[in-house]
Image (cartoon, rainbow, N blue to C red; front, side, top):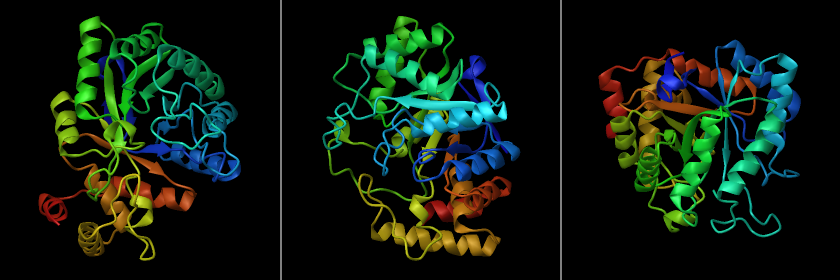
Length: 326
């Protein structure tokens, strides 16, 4: 797999595909999740992506299942400190008994960050979290307070690298500038929704949105600042490979005529190359000017095997441009 440097000299390198574990312990039972984790490690994968709220919306879920399962797997396989872990804070429900929306998130107040980090680290059973994200922006808290709280985690050795997920570009830049001005560690990685398709404009105000896509401006910013961009939901819920699946709708809406056109071209190019549409979509994401690391959200070892096959696809410029122009 291709290797990426995360966080500069003080950070770490990681393989070209990150393993998403959102439904591990809920929709994906422990036995299957362990099999997926074993195969990912065997294939050279070395970074797991989770959050302190995965997956509270799943049947029977409370939001601790994914981290807890990863902790059990790391312990049972002796992988703590060897397999890198990314987790997040800020998007869990503030009031679990109420409907979930942008105004019902735990947010990024210093006390929340400190308390939730301790709980995540305990569930994961690790001394150091390799990549710790602000899961969603919180404009109700002064940026200097949030920056200070995250910075202390790096300074005391609890976190290697900080990242921001679901942030507008201007807010990301402002946070990084605040960190630089205070002499604190800054966000050095980004995680946004990103796939081969283009979404419609948001139907809700950006501060209230649960998910934000990586648009041209974010990709340009990532290239300019040398930030790796971790792409979640890169396969659009099976829309590339399954004729019965339409592109996802809300909260980020990809279900429009332009998506159908791009999917048709993707499938044609994949057939010509002798690969699957999913594999080609992953290879295309990883072939642009930005350092894009797809997060593989799989529910079986078979899905993982297909996704891992994308690592061996080398796109020439003509194929890349035909896909880009569709």
